[in-house]
Image (cartoon, rainbow, N blue to C red; front, side):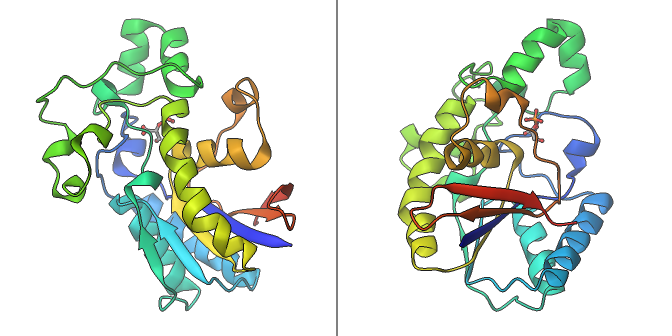
Length: 229
Ligand SMILES: O=C(O)[C@@H](CO)OP(=O)(O)O
């Protein structure tokens, strides 16, 4: 059975403050650091040995991966970072408090922005100081590839090629892979792996810091999934 373990980063300081985060590069909270240690302990108990680790380029995912790898004594395992695993870009919502936004626009609208498949958040205006185009992390990218806001659908358009080009070939080669990423970038990958419909994906929530094991058949079709406890 092919195996890929996915972990949503531990709680970040903006998760704690209930703020829309997206591509904003905020650190883990104290609780998030603890969650990452616990995730590592669970993986250690499951005796999993990884061949490669993949993260986004955001520090909350990278730190979580490092804490996990240290906890399991596998810091030496090759690690790859890609913007394609970044959280869904939350556009002009980034930085706003989620409850304040629900009070202003209504719970229904905020649920659509947060969980629907194809509804875009309000986009960042060109030149907005929050734009990722000002961040050196993204300077190698075609400026047109840098989003001003993404739906789950447009997130999938950039996570899926990464899955297909980098992760799927490793799994086909029987390597065991760890991906440490984000709630919505992982939801987009889960949608592909589990063959979820646009309605089913609305219901899928991925908690912070919980190692989720996907077992896949030889052709990488979905077999089963379970959280390590
Ligand atoms: O703010 C965000 O970027 C994400 C993940 O924390 O939040 P949501 O749960 O709204 O997708």
